[in-house]
Length: 338
Image 1: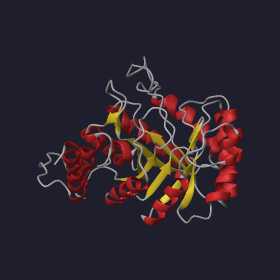
Image 2 (image 1 turned 90 degrees about the vertical axis):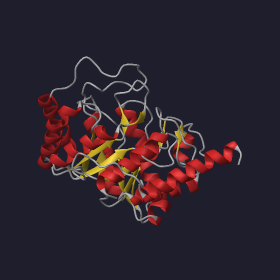
Image 3 (image 1 turned 45 degrees about the vertical axis):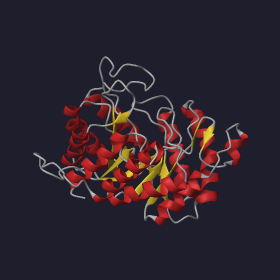
């Protein structure tokens, strides 16, 4: 057996172990299955801060199987394009100078979602510019995407992919316009957003630092998001706050606010449980299992409606480019007795 065959055999053995459960699981000294289970994940194929894994349909099909094995029923394409790179051959975006993709990932994800019994949410285009440009370009993207893919049974909703944390100029108007159009063209399919909390870990992925000088207070977070959600409550059905920008001991307070706000404005309150670690100097690696567990337990205590993650394929999958992701998958299965 040569070196390549040996490494391949190791990878195959690891994947089999991940699917069958670890043979010699350590006895946990904490109660099992106290957290909110992950039942959804983003699909991050157009990213600006995470490496590509260069998967084809065979790898993606296997990954959907790994997702299904732990109870994931919802997949969300985080964005259909970012600046010039796109996931589908959009006539409009190609006309704006975007690059032609080698395969139609949207169509592939929709087929795989249907094959594995999952619902798919379409993430809007991110031009990397201001809210006005974001909203204007997505007028064309939303109509074209629905014409092209709306017939697929797995198409269950829309993700408005602009990530923000504070009451920024134009944010309410832009999200409202995109949400209204998404719901109108698809006859009311659900829409959701996944903003972040402006906590002390809210730093750029391209900066070396791990924290800023402060972080928003719980009261200011509630005040600002009360105004934002009030302005979009008729066109956004779900709000899934990212959970990685505040410290672990702060989660209960912020989750309680998020739940209260969503109830006030008639939205589902999901949590975006980040499966990567924001506490490490290398950005980004799979999270330590106990950190992940603690976040899911806090979400359960707050009574949140659903847990999705950013994101399974890089940070939890047995076939991830990060070996630690396979271990996180195994620890997660042990904890939930899957």
